[in-house]
Length: 117
Image 1 (cartoon, rainbow, N blue to C red):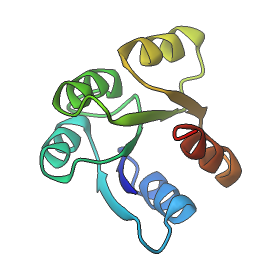
Image 2 (image 1 turned 90 degrees about the vertical axis):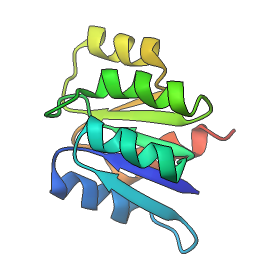
Image 3 (image 1 turned 120 degrees about the horizontal axis):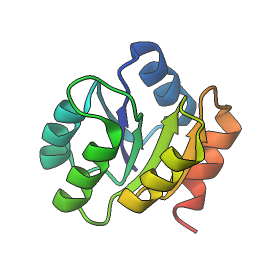
Image 4 (image 1 turned 90 degrees about the horizontal axis):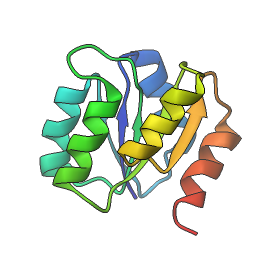
């Protein structure tokens, strides 16, 4: 699986990578939406984990941009923003999953596996 982890926190990026990395996975990371869109052009991820609140470009705008470039990409939002309108907007933009920070390894694994059922 090819995975792109997008979060402005290096700690969160490393935690997500450690949580889901398997021997044959390819994982790239980005610290903001602008960087993520550049990576998507050359990397073509199967799955993207996306933070909402980031500098330069927020996650919702980035989701829309990713899906324009790579329509089949699966996106899971991982955010500290727990309000219902944010979750609804993320799904409306094209996200297939939504996890709240802090998340468990089991919850993240479930969300990723659920994308391919």
